[in-house]
Image 1 (cartoon, rainbow, N blue to C red):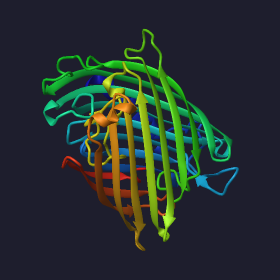
Image 2 (image 1 turned 30 degrees about the vertical axis):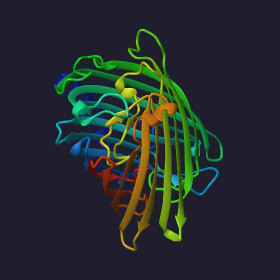
Image 3 (image 1 turned 60 degrees about the horizontal axis):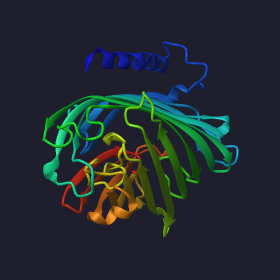
Image 4 (image 1 turned 180 degrees about the horizontal axis):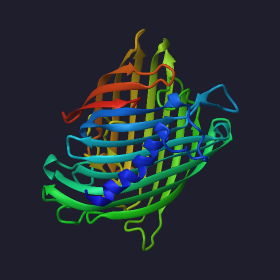
Amino acid sequence: MGVRFYSLVLVFLIPLFGWSQGFFPYPKWLPAPDSLHVFPTPVFYRTPENGVAYGLGTLYRFDPISYTDSTKKRFSTVYLSLIHTTKKQTLLELNHHLLFAKGKVFLRGNFNVEDFYDKYYGIGGNQKESALETFRFQRTFCFQQAQWQYRKNAYLGVIGWYYDLRNISVISGNGTLSNRTAPGAEGSRNFAMGFNSTIDTRDHQFVHSKGWFWEVQLLHAANNEFNTHPFTRVRTDLRWASPIFNEKTVLASQLYLDQVSSGAAFQFIPSLGGDRILRGYFRGRYRDLAYAATQVEIRHTFKNQFGFQAFASAGQVGPTWKQFGESPWKFAGGAGIRYKVSEGSRTIVRLDYAINREGGSGWYLRVNEAF
């Protein structure tokens, strides 16, 4: 991956490790963390896209704040990890979620530098397995969101997104990526800005058992010399959960819609599948300019630290919403177990197995719920 990648690792890893161990003074612009909230963490997970991933991380969790309009308490966090996978992918990830003004303002984002292996099947909902191309690339992307709470449970914000994908080398296959006719096949670079609106009544950020979440986002990369593939993207994410029968059993659902304008590089074209929604499909198995997906799951927690879930999902891609009928709808479902690592923060480890309509399947070992 070269000197550039490892230089970025050192630039972020050394000072953050020094802060966590007390070697360097902590930045004054961040609230000082409690020593018990700063600790190294092993990283281990599995998905079809990554294979088995392993590495080390450092988590900085600040003292919880009390919201001005409720009794809810949430944490500010900064998390740095360096990960390697059995598919020879290397990922440096820096994520943060910082709360200010008693929860009325927050900054959320991530900075990633990656050397990656992936699969590409082309664009459309009828792509055959024979269209598969495997490729490697390097990418850098940075996402930053700032939101302001203008009324109870309602937020408005701005978004900035920088994405640079380069050094694409096709390993196998002879399709549009190999022939360099796929949009973005030579690489792509975009800086996009946008707005979003969020309503969030959930009782927890990552493992919620009641309440709902609704986000609408508009993102635009202007047509200028800097952006290689200008685009406009509109997406909405609606989630809901509520106990049924008793507090130990929860019904949760999600509706996700995504639309991107023509001309976008294939990396920005909505991709169906992954470890979050339509589990059982390889992320990117089907992709197109318009994408819709929904899922529902039943979550049950036992008296000990374990839980069980069953889930089902459906989705489709197409050039437009009206052309969804040109290919079969995609369906997937499965079940999983949960282990509650922390009672206070509700942190869980989940292991899911899902199968899709075509007979493909996947195992997913991740932290926190899929949605």
